[in-house]
Length: 609
Image (tube, helix red, strand yellow):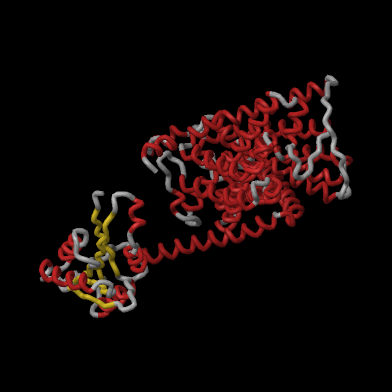
């Protein structure tokens, strides 16, 4: 990427000393960390109605008690996570809580569940945002996947620009949705209580299921999608300005109040306006509600645009937390170390790119359909809820600080409640796609443990006694310089090899393609390099790599010590020129990578045009 374009897209590099100044104030933090939870109001009611509609119009009245139960659960989880925020001011949420109190292996279960949930959050939020757009403009429906991928690209670039900058930019659509959603609800309440209730066209619903306990559980489990993203603030406390815990706590309370009000309001109005939803309906539930209250004019379009914006910003919450959680895992040796590296703008670029690729793959696989992705959703986050609150109970019992019994009771209530909900979600959604997440979590945990075992083995093999070892006696240096031909590009490499050892050897492979050139090489060598022997190996089958490896083995067998191989290469001025040349040097480097006691030196000659 040209430097000028990179600076336009990403911005100027920031020094490490700026890290503290790049933190978020509460207004920005609410936009970054609460957008996932608040955005779920755009599809949570719809998912409840999608299940209840199968039992006919009589079942739609159950949406209100189900929404109330979910709101009570929201209050319990919020109260529980308030304690986590103050107990772990460095952030890390469920992962660090489990690592400290339940052990590293249980922490990997929580980490895997959260990472999967973050990936699904991006996929679901973006697909739901595009669904809001196609509800207003059905002509775009055939381009759903492309629009989804474009949205991920824009969000990823915004986050690579930095936490504070993304918080400032992404605050606009978040607060725009909050204003439009509150306007919608207040207008709806006013119309209802003043007797100006709009007429909504009713679907003729044919019951395909009976109203039963399992149906209610399924609807409840689907509506629990509204609670995803609540843990985001506890994971990213260090993104807040000091005092971090207090600011994170205030932001979480504000988020929960907004979420509860908008979710309950949409559910209540949808029921009283007689709105139902069936799979593949061209309009979402919020779109139907806005159409009924605002009509199809400017306010309707503004609401749909705000809904699309908040759903895209819901994905942004994962971009704030997924890279940070990956950095915690990588720091502890359970994910590749590269995920701990900060980019030019003081964000974890590698984690952002990984999240973008995985979410894009999901959207392509499921054709950008929110209804297909939702069944996979919420399983992971409730597993992490349960493990985190259980870990907090263990922490209070172990520390026994003043008031520990009350704190343990609160977290115990949270753990019990979320465990029951987790079982309900897993049971009711298992055959609808939740089995994929249930299967992936142990696979991911196994991968994490294998990565950690590798890092432990590397550390063990590289470790030596505290007493510094003495340098070994100087050994005879064996140097082999590869000579494809003798020219201005290879001659400096030959000279360099000669400086490394007076016994350096030139090595050339004769593939029999041009006898005249082979003879010319021999004459030039005798004239220019009379003090260095040239080994010419004939390769009747035109192999290059195998003869080199065989000769290196012969050099190693003739006496101990490593062999230094000097490989001359020329570098074209433009990157695409490389396509025009064979890649023999690359194949040689790849083969020597796995050879013991072989030191490879690349001697590059840079072409000017």
